[in-house]
Image 1 (cartoon, rainbow, N blue to C red):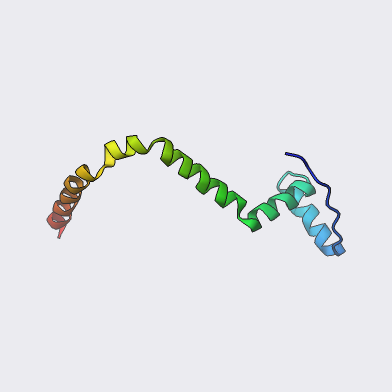
Image 2 (cartoon, rainbow, N blue to C red):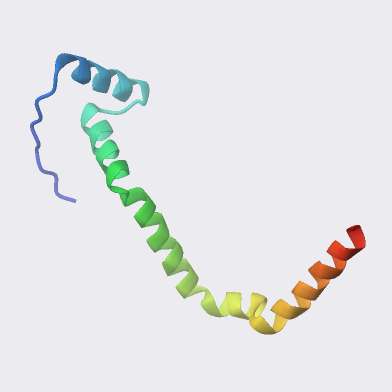
Length: 87
């Protein structure tokens, strides 16, 4: 991915906090700021959801075979029987 330089003016306290937090995490200030922006825009969450969606599409037939509607009733009956036995 191509990088673009971004110059930002912040007060000294903010700059100091950014340096300290980045150092504590073992990363550069640039990387720290980049991760903050990604978290703020929800990119990480969207990436996870997209990957999970792709996974489910890829293995949809396997899940349908294992957990399909025809087996759902049988499992549901088993669960209810187990619950009733505990009451």
